[in-house]
Amino acid sequence: MKILYIDTTSSYLYSGIVEEGKLLTEVKEELGKDLSSNTLPKIEEMFQKIQLQPEDIDKIIVVNGPGSFTGIRVGVTIAKTYAYSLKKKITTISSLEAMALSSKKETKFQIPIIDARRNYVYAAIYEQERNPILKPQYIKLDTLKCAVEQLIGSYQYISNQEFTDFAIENYDPDILKIVNAYQEKEEVNPHAVNPIYLKQTEAEEKQNLELI
Amino acid sequence: MKDIYILGIETSCDETSASIVKNGCEEIATVVLSQIDIHKDFGGVVPEIASRHHVKNITMVIEECLEKAGMDIKEMSGIAVTYGPGLVGSLLVGIEAAKTLAFVNHLPLIPVNHMSGHIYANELVKPLAFPLIALVISGGHTELIYMKDHYQFQKIGGTLDDAVGECYDKVARVMDVPYPGGPTIDQWAHEGEDTYSLPLPLNDQSYDFSFSGLKSAVINLVHNENQRGNEIRKKDLACSFQNVVVEMITKKTMKALKDYQVSNLIVGGGVAASKGIRDKLMELCDKESITYSFPERKYCTDNAAMIAASGYHAYLLGQRADLHLNPQSSLELNSRK
Image (cartoon, rainbow over all chains, first blue to last red; front, top):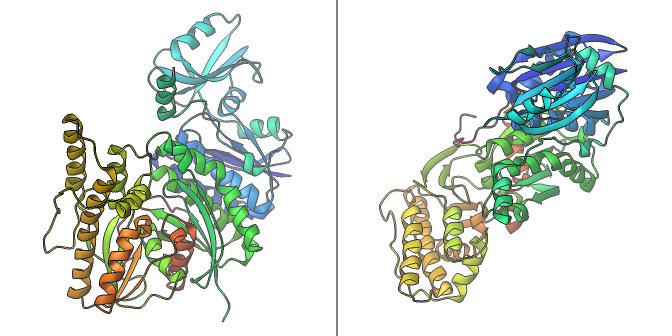
């Protein structure tokens, strides 16, 4: 079974193709503003490099957030369109799960963290990589820090962004490990694959305030 | 000759649409999913919300279109997609979907300018006759374009500030008509009488338009009357307002036809559905023996059939995009691409 992994939820493209526990090819590159223009060309390059056709893929694992709203939509749109059009299996995972799984430090807790601006972050706390103690959420940085202070045992923050407040393990996705961990995850209908933003739009937030 | 089927995709604003058009003129199936009810609550299109709905619906819209046509994507000759002008986040979803369809099905990708789509919506009525003047009037655009032949676009005039449809919506808002208020203003204009005096902006020899002064004049008039405790006769004000708009648009359009010695006029865009503008243009064209065409109402507002129709001609001209295709929020119509 050949599995295509796609994560465009940050300014990086993380993508790879895995077959029977082997990573055939991968790309990890900061694309920044070129994320939308370059993601598909980079994926096409991977296919060419290992001489595969889009039809040869059996399953797609797409990271559907949280992270950059536009970034999430790039990966999710590509993945759901691909799966729908070629009738491929598809499943989603959270960017925070992928980050926790990729930690190379042997701590008890993993704390993946993504900047959401204005002193807010998207974060979660996992125990032993998979078990969420604090589920993925949009949370004030100070509130997260309070929760972290309650932890009993070693912990590690993980991010591909810079935070000045604490030591960060730089996020370097272990695509093979992520795919192996989630390849059996239940597949979903491609039409139902949607971004998980964890945050309303500003217009909706403002409207909710007015309703109160 | 083999029939050419183009699958068009349009997501430049708040409509998610897919359509299959045969040989550039025969609409086979079209699906338009409008988000208008969602944006109504916010008094206008909220870009981030629009993008979120596009990504949610895009594959369902494409599937429904193919099912409606009873066709397989492998039967398409190419995938045409709007790449601008429009909201970047909205365009992005259609573009990524179109690029993916092209990539996984080994099909050519055809970039289409949204404005060109509004012009080519007329091909779904009858073949374009050249040379022609195209008047594109919508919520985002107000332009006069001269065309010698297919895909030879020469912009000769346009709005210097607001688009005409935008002006309608803002005038509607000051009269407490919920978004989008354009159609209501058009309706009221027919029921009211032209009793308010409003300035005719940019009454000059250019082919350009200006609507912000007119918009301000209406807003000021409403505020002043409210302050004096006078009630606004909304239908009359709508009539006076629309008369000014119609006069400005028809005057510049007829001048362009005359100056360029062109006897074909085509009109496109959401405001082309306005009865006030349609009626006046038809009357003037009949008088001057100018042939004209308006798209069917359903093809005036944003839709993918017009993108597929335009994409057909781009396809014949060999215009292709690769997988790097990116949204362009402000994209001019020109003959280069």
